[in-house]
Image (cartoon, rainbow, N blue to C red; front, side):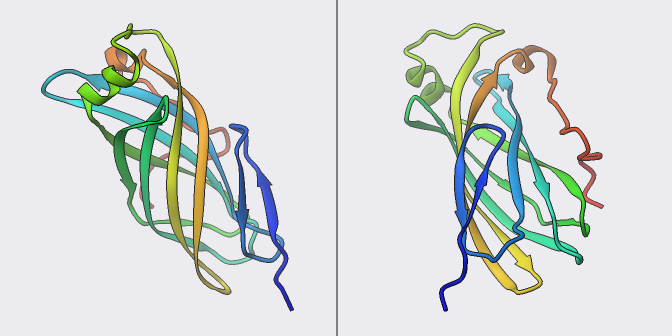
Length: 166
């Protein structure tokens, strides 16, 4: 028998397919901010909201991501292992190393603090579910704010608690 495919509609407007029977872990991009842009240090920060509908904890064992702007890869990041408690939401921070020259080229040299840049966080997370380990591919389009390049601000998802590893 073929397992049911569950289509998750994400807050950011993306759709992913997960080969898991209903219910399924949900992932949303809640924040994407450029936090530094200089010759010495260029980085961004994404925050994902992960929801666990299961009666037991789900472990996010690994995550690898690329940041795309105008179809060009401009950064890479990974998520550390995290546990999402049963029937809970969890904010997961993804630090992203930015290729400064690549970002400026993708923007055609047009950069100003305060911009909202169309971007996409793509990659996969590895989940340890009650039914076994699963890989969940993600394509999460959103808007990357550049105010954080001067203030270092970002948003923790509502209901997601803190970003502490515990």
